[in-house]
Amino acid sequence: MEQHFLSVEEFNELLKNWNGQNITITKHEMDDIDETQMKLEAISYDRDTRRIDDYEPMHSLHLNGTGHILSETNNPQSLPSSLYEIPLEDSTMYEFDGSEFLLSTSRGVYKIRLQI
Image 1 (tube, rainbow, N blue to C red):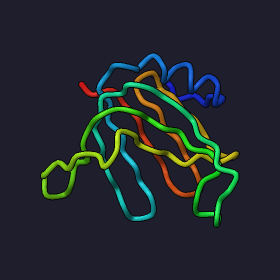
Image 2 (cartoon, rainbow, N blue to C red):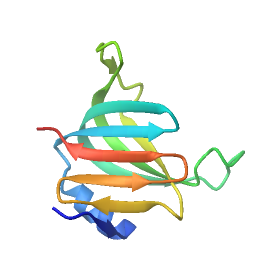
Image 3 (cartoon, rainbow, N blue to C red):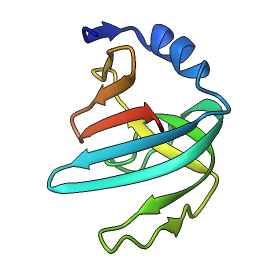
Image 4 (cartoon, rainbow, N blue to C red):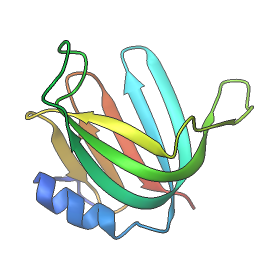
């Protein structure tokens, strides 16, 4: 299916349809690639206007649920908390091709897809 760009509102509505499903989140920041698997239980957003520096995001997407981080040693580690945070920017690009979401920021690229 063809990839197309979404508004944050369209992205939110489509992603809400995945509540209760098992998802995989792949984060690619600089030369680091991490993969997390979780059961998506809720989606929320956070706004932090009291940031110390620009590294802390003003807006964040919170994927709430239980899961684990896959490591290079194939030894899954439990998530340290029941949420996975994706930093958002005003310039974040939201894409969807019918089977996976792609969020592109100045810090990295995040892919969210259903587990098969």
